[in-house]
Image 1 (tube, helix red, strand yellow):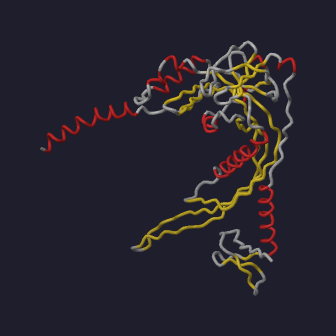
Image 2: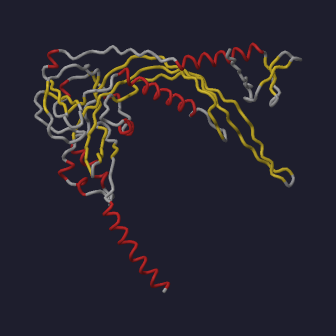
Length: 359
């Protein structure tokens, strides 16, 4: 038969508690406090229940609208035979190149089988602004391969609407920390350091609206996180009128698959929010986290991104820029021939000078 052992900690100093047969209470050897058994059992019952609630997976409302027949009739789906990306555009768009791998053999096909976005943030930064930002990002990069900075390469920038699932929810948290304060004073000829130990508790709830999780495996999560945030004040009901001149990535990660990442982002943000309210301590170590998420609605949105994919020596490098705010991230390679030429040009004169001085 399995036996479960619970080690109770003092609510005041987090030291271990032991039952005293004399007083009939749980005593702490560190701070001297005593507690009724019922009080400690109730405290731990609340913590255990909070942990159990946090462990259960919240159920999100995934009810969404599908495309109407008339609107879908004016849309086309493109499938890249090289990387497999599924792209969407209006019916006036000619054959184009894939924004993820630059393969030019993209074939138009019948548009079927996907949900209609609820919202869209229209492009605010045009292609010229994106090109300028990219050129500025290249400035000062002495070891950047020439193929990256060539004008014809920059012209391959493409505007693409990336699919995002937006999650609403409320997190209820019970977070506990061990913290210290350190004081020093001089006593005679000695310096005395006193360390005070504290048990810090934060409880409360945080409301989240439209937590974004991208629904495309072709767009790296790290890139999308890096160009956040988007200004949701510009979020408008979706209309296919925003698509002409741009591509849209067809989601290949369903909303229910993205729930785990949404929950992780909500929990992490809740922990950060609670921790930001604790000040004045020399150290702070998390002891326990119990965060329960009450799920709300899930919406589907297209968010604007400028993309440039370049291949260098068998490896893909992706530049991405927020099409609303201009915030960017770019993977840049190093041309080692340029680097070693520069290093030789610098080190050789120094070696000759040292040789002249020493010998």
